[in-house]
Image (tube, rainbow, N blue to C red; front, side, top):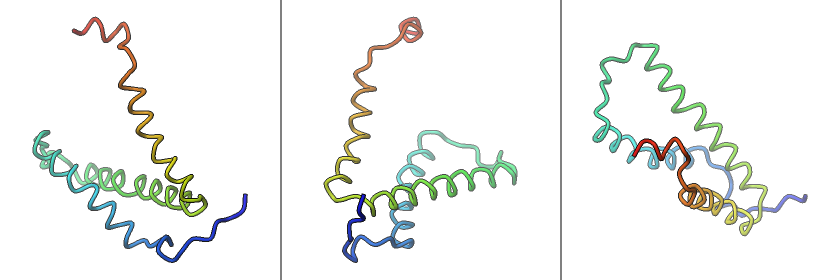
Length: 105
């Protein structure tokens, strides 16, 4: 597979990625605080460290992998990747409930 040359606008910029992640996570944090009513005082120092680790390291790896894949794809191929999550959601939503879910109603 030959590498597709990208214009300067599509080059990886870590600061821009960090802003995108932060802006994408902000609504989740606000809605989580409103609807879940977390008891943040119950977290120990190791609990805070685990939460910060899980929020930064796995998400960082995911975003780095995603942008690395996008750099190697043509725009039409990248657009097709975006449709995968919508197709997966619709497929999961259309699945009839299993036996365990019938007994809960």
